[in-house]
Length: 154
Image 1 (tube, rainbow, N blue to C red):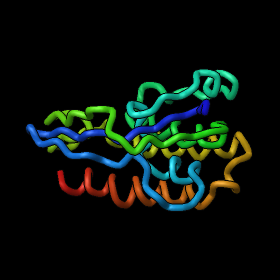
Image 2: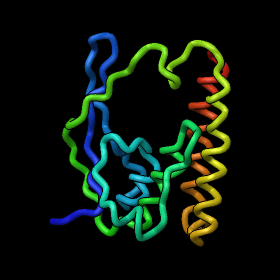
Image 3: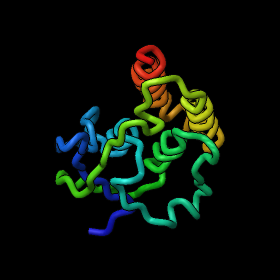
Image 4: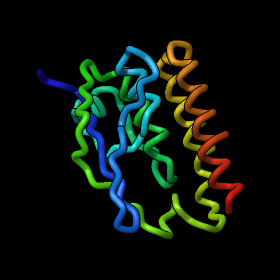
């Protein structure tokens, strides 16, 4: 079966500890919704180039969280999403990386730009009301949970 988008599980490796991570969380019976609400990183995905080209989808430049600002949009344009429940990628966590810093870094404020960009893309593509609940979840997950951990633990 041909697929527009293939996602695989991955190993998360930190300090010689290796753990299997599920790439897709089950929120719904719809794979597109599950994809949209799961890990937005592109590194454990194979994506048809034509999806980007034919739909004028581009990564947000000069900001971190560029994957969050872009990857959920692909769900609408992927006709067939396949989830491979096998870890086929090694994600190595490095101490001191931008996303794992122990002190404040202004770059982390890019989350606000990324989420605004994502919302604007959904509006521009007339997808906002179709995926309003999913966008709300993404905001809650990344602003109230992930970003608060980042900003308040520092």
